[in-house]
Length: 140
Image (cartoon, rainbow, N blue to C red; front, side, top):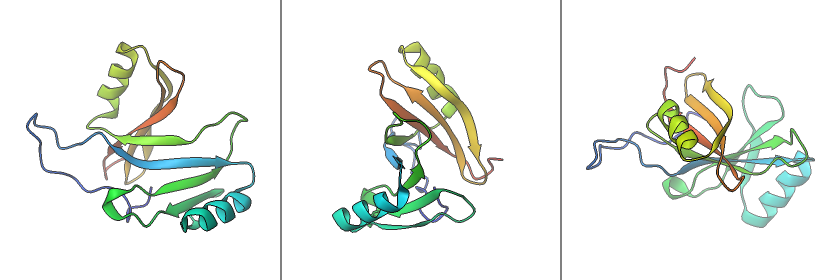
């Protein structure tokens, strides 16, 4: 997630939370990224460019403004790797505990993305993968 595309902090809601749990980023794995770039670019008109400082990772600009998240295109890491949606949360740590309490699984624990935030990869009770995202520019 680039600094340019990361969601901005929201005012507190009635429950005192500043974070609305919504999809803020997605990642599409591909066996042949050039083929996937051509497909999604032609299908949706998405602009897909190399992500600065990362190898085998591309930024997908969906052009949807604040209403639609941008995403990433990456080299597939294992044969059954699915598209992963990142959901904005107040705290990755607290949300991971809630995932476990509700019967889900933590597949990758809280991981920093320097100067952007933290994420964790989870699996729901139906074996679907998703990620939690916590914005924190102090992440190291």
